[in-house]
Length: 43
View 1 (cartoon, rainbow, N blue to C red):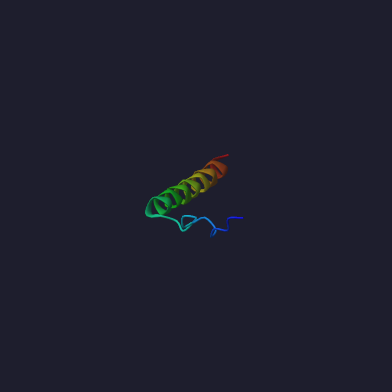
View 2 (view 1 turned 60 degrees about the horizontal axis):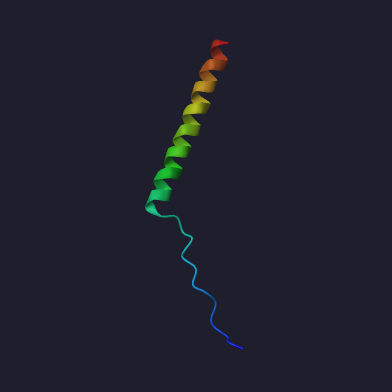
């Protein structure tokens, strides 16, 4: 029986690109909430 160490898994920490994407998503959600509040006031 061949016993080998467990395969190496790449790190799961967010990369710089991941942080940029997260910031864009948060900004989009904030914009949707803001515009929804404005639409609610005008309705």
